Length: 155
Image (cartoon, rainbow, N blue to C red):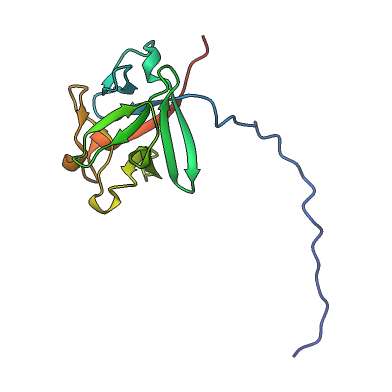
């Protein structure tokens, strides 16, 4: 071993004025396919709308564990879910069909894949006509499954 001087560095004492973000605030999930916002209606139906003033598009994304989210409507309280056939729906009571794996893609959009049916790789998606896309007909690379979380504009 060679003998020599040891260089030590002082601890970083700078502070950065970064804005504190509130991750509990509602979000809008904007779909890349047709410009629709994901909407959970009071009857449990799930679709897309271009009406930014629709109260049913305000969604709360709650982290259940690392990479897993529960998506709920702030207006109806319904939770987004996907059943065994790939159909998306809203349910007032959360269950294991309500968990989705959230992934940030290279293009900065998010995808939401069913946790319960993870082996099938079924995603939440919206068709070009605004109707929800069956999870069994989705796959990686489709525009229908790309969502951009946007802040809700202040009233």
